[in-house]
Length: 261
Length: 288
Image (cartoon, each protein chain N blue to C red):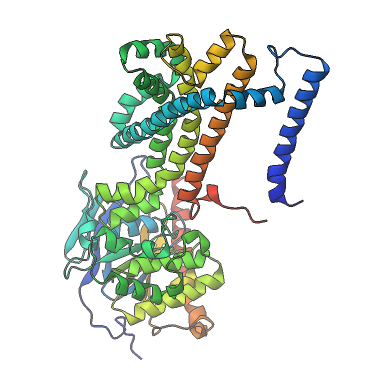
């Protein structure tokens, strides 16, 4: 078996094994579906409740996408401000950390009260969760310029703007994408958590709200189906971001090198 | 035969002039001690010395990449860097090739290429930074031809060998048609075969153009093969302790490398280096 095939087949085999034993154990021990539903039941529910669940998925993805976009725009802007001077970075960085360490569950109710528009409130929450890796990685990247190249740019009289665009930004790209990979997942988590908090106020219809409702109604198969969709969405986001990184870096960066067979 | 240090070129004024240039680091280490030095127009001058003798620092001073803590450094009539504190070297003015002003270029120890840019975009960088868009394709072609890399314009640096990367670096330095080329141990990281070939290329280039080169190396053979004039340096503090003119005509070939003259010159330089380092060991011992 070739290595390439093994890369896909091996994890697929593990997944199939787990699903099969899950199905087998649930059937063998006659576990009631409101405790642990069999995979087949989850699949059936997914198809049955598809209109409801996919609408909810769209809502959650909408929030996630907006939050990730906002985190990238704001995070890169903040990083660009940070690298202008050490003083600015020293004065502001602790507050960026503060944003990172404050649990979103604790501040989400406040944000939901303050921000009138429910969608905007959820986006703000998810952005707060997702922004830190972008800020810290991009700042690090913008500073990680090869000193030899920095000398070269100085030697040829490059201006501040030329140095930023031609040297600092390309140097920062691999770091930025590493941050983006983490932030993509965090934006989804942020969106789900915020929905949970807001959902209790009955203002949302995202996937987290469906999970909450299904839990209250002991509709465990639907809960599992919703959970499955969130997980798949997370994997899809990761794959998309990785693809973007691959397209941007494949020609030159070590992280995207294909190992010799 | 009378030695002709200008090698048939008309002798003009000094290109680099250093007077009492010293460099003391904040931690008290004296990297360079009152260097007086003139680089004549058209010369191939080599700074030869053990590691840590400050030869790279000296070269960086000429390029305006670092300032002397005392004394001054001038390129052509223009002063690029002086010892007064807080004064930033402004080599940039000398380097930008606007109008008739002479230009300088620097080749670093490592190829120092932008990994995200193709060979072509790396080589044209000095023109792009100077927003000099006249005749870029022709200049690019000429620079790449000089280092025999015309077929590699669209290739990325990591797809090239170490020697080819260094040639890209040299093409980038030559694209502005500099009058002064500063080279900081450019071939130190390469194998001997590649290094010898690049030495030969540089020697040819220098002979063909009205180029002044200051070359830093710790290799006696490289110094003898390339230079018209070798300055021997000693370490702690960095000083120029000796000077040797090499009158062998350019371009030099592999025949020179194996000649008896070559061996004799190497022996002389070797003795000068030993004297220089022997002295410093002695003074150390006396002090201790």
